Amino acid sequence: MRHIYLKTTLMAIVMAITLNSLNAFADDKSNTPIVNINNATAQELAYLPGIGPSTAERIIHYRKGHKFEKTLHITRVKGIGRKTYEKIKIYISINSPTTATAKIKITSDKTVTKPNKTTSKK
Image (tube, rainbow, N blue to C red):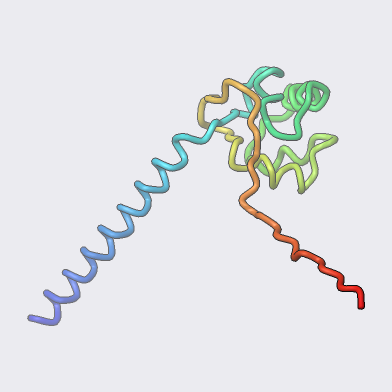
């Protein structure tokens, strides 16, 4: 009997931790500007990093005949490859409403420190 109680308690703790982690992730995501690629205007699509007016128009032209079923399908549009997709994937949605109101700027988390080169003349 005690074994079942411990197992149930452990399961409840794991579920509580998981739910808390998911809520933290959802809160973090809520501050991220989103562009819905299925219904955004050309101007809203151009808010995405690496997407200019021409590419935004190509997205609109493509979606006239095709609904994006997955965000990855945006790579089917000429001018959007894997690199661009990797840059914009956290900012695009096929279901959520567009919340972006200005050009999205990516700030790099990676800082490269180059060692100082010192030369000594003897």
